[in-house]
Length: 70
Image (cartoon, rainbow, N blue to C red; front, side):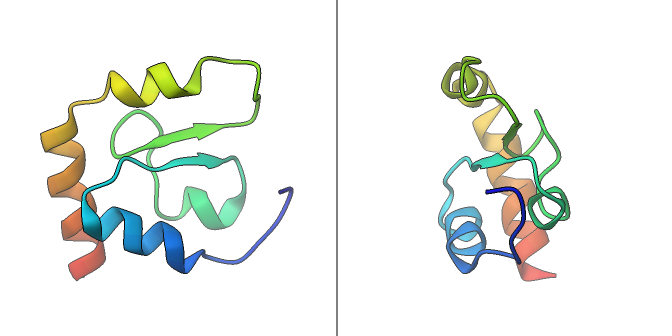
């Protein structure tokens, strides 16, 4: 989407230990630091799944749980 509010499913995924792969919209950028705790993509032709798999999963999960708990 080109715009949206914060997605509850994004927050649930972050809390559950999933690595979020989201579209580049302001609501997602409030929660996700691209390459740190998830992947933000604006181009469905790029290899965004591979980018997500290359993240430090443990670090991303710790950060996401911290963000959600705060």
